[in-house]
Amino acid sequence: MQISRSYITTGLLFVGVIAGFVLLNYTIPVIPYLLYFSFPVSTLLFWLFLCLLYYTGMRIQGFQYFSHNPVYVLLILLLVSLKVTIPAGFFSVKFIHDPHWQTVFKKCIHWGYKAVIPVTLYMVWRFYLHKPKKLSPVKNNQQLLIIAFVIVFIPVLFYLKQQPAFQIAYPKLKAIAGLKDQTGYWLYAFTFETFYLLDFVTIEVLFRGLLLQFFLHYKKARDYIIPMALVYGAIHLGKPLLECISSFFGGLLLGYLTYRTNEIYQGILIHVYIALAMELIMLF
Image (tube, rainbow, N blue to C red; front, side):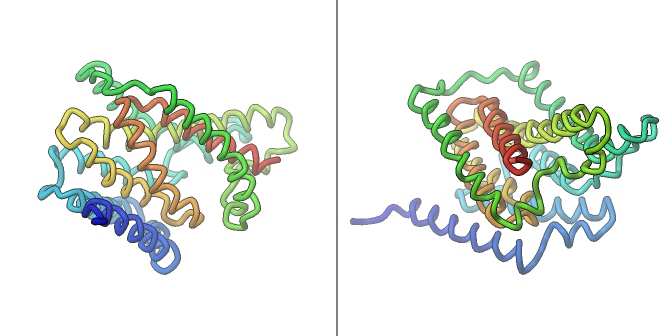
């Protein structure tokens, strides 16, 4: 039986991505190395790295050019680079006088600031400049697959809870562990987690919205999924290996869901669910 060339290419891509992420995560720690440079040098270097990855993805898909709209893609990739490389302490919290709240916002307010430009751009484009028609509604079997994923992922999270790398990285709430004995800690925790979950809205807007949904009116729009997923995987470099590798495949799945529905809210709900479940399981 003859194997389609596209299947071979896809298989080799997956193997290459896994091998590349392992190499970059353990042999050449890209993110920590780039963050060694001060802002904005780190932003420029990481932006060039993302541009190279995106162009690689476009060539894999058979495109002879960077994008249908190269200037737009370069600007969105710059936003992605800024999101990753701007340090948490870059934004001042001097306007907050309470020392406890100042501690909380030092750790989380950057997620709020980093959401402003991407979410504003997306809202203006989505609801004022262009109102795309739905390509295909989420059918009952697709809804069942989403529900099945949500259920099956719970034991996966319990498995990850036992892994040392995840125990170091999560829960994010431990960033304000010093306030645990303070009155009103639950409110501090709620505020922190709200900003943390907002970051996943920003991620979906950037990747499934501005880097994919924007192009769905073009021919071969599906071919934009892999370049987007490669860049999405790249922002997880430096995180636990399983998270790094799975992010690429998660980007493909969420990208395909966006391609089928021309909506990103399902991806937002799934992403927020995973992040919140991880926080709760690692806490308790």
